[in-house]
Length: 292
Image (cartoon, rainbow, N blue to C red; front, side, top):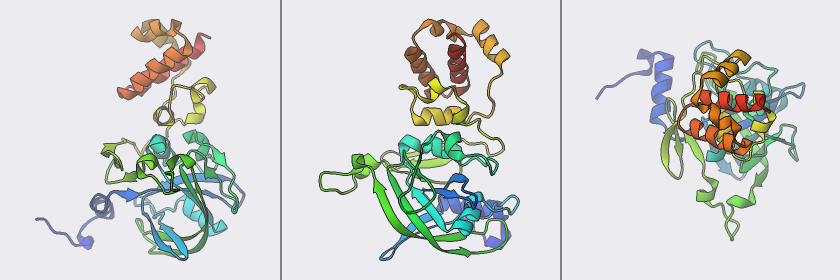
């Protein structure tokens, strides 16, 4: 057995070991606003429930290991003292992953991830309409655990109101865990689905996804493509140029599909996404748009 003392490891290495060792972890999909009312949405897996009376949740937006900067969520909860904690189920896991991309301060992650802002009843931050459970909270305290990169910041949240989709409740009004279908975080690119176990969502931290908001309206409102499909497309780093779409029209074996109805093209795009070829799926969808 290999043994380490924390002081003998870099913060990045220690961070990686801890995330792999303490897993799977529930995800707080935290919605906040800044002092000017600009919305922000980001997931955090340093999260759990710590009390029922009073009802207290705690999550921790840590200082970035690589450069010791703070996250917009931390800055917002310190400024406004409000947050909505949305649960993450399998249906929105790809969109949740996309929202974790570090977009600039003035970018709305709801739009980038293709999620719907839903007005809260007691606080100003918006809820995620697609989340099966949404919890409105006031922030009682923020406890800073350190000043160096990797240091956590405990956001102690008191529950003000809970919203639950009727679809996840059984006939006795209890939460059906199978229907809820929660997702948890593990080390590296691994997640865990409560019903099925581990799966991976590769996410290069050096790039920004194009965002669901950049996709054509017909794609965003597709009756075939799911939120996860849109999340995968939105997580692509590069939006194809017009000449690339034209080249696709001239050379791809997929062109024959473009004569089909839009729904059929979307079904084919979904097949490509599921076979890990989202780039071709996006080109196909854009080519179909150009033939309208």
